[in-house]
Structure formats: C-alpha cells, structure tokens
Image 1 (tube, rainbow, N blue to C red):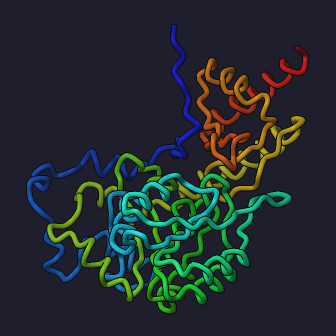
Image 2: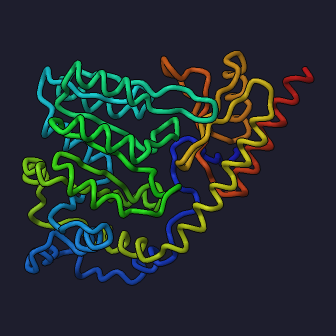
Length: 349
C-alpha cells in the first residue's frame, strides 16, 4: 500500500482558501463564461483592480493584474531589460529571477543576503555599493525573501529606493501578508518612487495558487509596462470573483497566519534543539533549516520513505539546508516528530 505524500516543498498554503471562495465557484453563472467583462465601460480594468486600488490607496490605473506574480515579474524584465543590460538580484533567491534574466540575455549582478545570528539579513551597504558600481537597468528585491524568509525593513527599503531612482525597482512581496497587516506604506512609496513596482500574489497567503492571480502597484514612471501588459479584453472573470471573496475573508486568513506563527516557533524550538541544526527566523510561510551536510541524503531519504516531501536545497550557497513549507498544525506536528525520531535513531546507531 503506497503512502499518500504530504508536500512541504513548494510553499503552498495547505489550509486552503476561505469558504467564501468555494461559494463563488458553486454559484458561478456559467453564461458569463462565454462573454468578455464589461468593466472597461466604467473606465476601469476590472472589479478586482478597482477593489485593490481602493484597499491600497492608489489610483486604479496603477494596479496591474497578471497570471500570478511570476507573470508580472516576467513581463517587467522582458519589458525593461535588454540584451547586455544589467539586473541586480539577491544571491540567495528564487531561481526564477535568474531564469527570466537569462531569457533576455541580461547580465546578472548578485547582491548579498548574509547569515545573521537568528535570521538572514540584507547587506544594504553592499547593495548600495554594487548599485553605484554597475548602475543596473533593473533591480529585483524580494521581501520576505525565498528561501531565507527575511524581510527588508521599511527604512532600509526607502534608503535603497532613494539611491536607485534611475532604475526600475521590482519589490516582490509574494509572502508579505504572513507577518504583516499594514499596507499604508504602499501609497507613500507609490507617490515617492515613480519607477517602483510592488508585486504581490493570491497564491501564498490566500491559498489560491491554482487560480493564478497576481497583481502589482505600478509607479507613474512605468508607462511602458502599463502598455506592454495591457489586456484589452479583460481578465479571467471567475478568478477575479474568487480573489474578491478572499479579500472579503480577512479573519479566516489571519487565523491561519497566527497558526503558522505558532508552528514556526515550534519548529525553531524543537528542531533547533537537535545538535547541528539551526532554524532561521522567517516572516514567510516556510522556515529554512541548516543541517549537518553529511546527514542530508539520509534524512531526505528517510522522510521521503515516510511520504514527507521536504525541499532540500542544492545550491552553491545553500547546500546543507532544508526549506520546510508550513503546513497545517497536524501536518507540522507529524513532520517535526518524524525528523526528531530519525535523528534520535541516527544518534543511537
């Protein structure tokens, strides 16, 4: 009898979307699926962009919708980065940043994210030095960053943006809402920095990865991107309705976020007590754990045999680490107990 696997490797939200999202699907008007939306007749792109603009305190035409955050990232890089032009990206980051840079033959300049006592940290001084040296066309900043889980403080971000005004700066906030509720800073950044693009998604916090809805707030200097990304026939009507239902369910999602915070503390406490393990503080829905490199293969095999699929990093700078997506509390308990048992057996052997 095969074991049904539990996936802790892709940063998906295992709690699932709010009940209101399922209700949208149950009562969907199938007749509307055959016709384009008519929101343009009211001078807006969609009901969703209108709602997001209202929530974030920006004009509706500043909101860009896309097929998940990855779609918007790709569009932006393809729009602004030409062959041989430079792009700054984090040294420890999502592989996709490098991939889309390569698609347009851009030159990658990596800036450091360094290990601190309790969490990884942006080296802002080095970022500024690299920026002044290379003057890149595009800068990608991930906060919280995947896979390290650390965020950039608002004062540090503002300082960077002041220096990087000549470049298109993309702030990838796919994981922001797990640790934060305050969105008031977005309006201020939007007003002050015309070449800033703030990207978010409904995939992570709202547990709608399969729906593929992402959005961004575009600075007023990004007219070229607005034209490049225009969707004159509207967006996916059902996806928009589901996203709106998610936005209308804040209590459901805050409860999940609180449970995830509790379980991140549990992983830190229990896995952090295992000799050779270090759990880094994270503001996302995952934790990064450094483990003894010599046990990496055996631990991965033992967990896989139990149907527990964890992301074991295999990168130049992160090769003795595993990234654990925070699942439900029952799932997290199962994984923590399994790792503890495996390591005790390893010591006993």
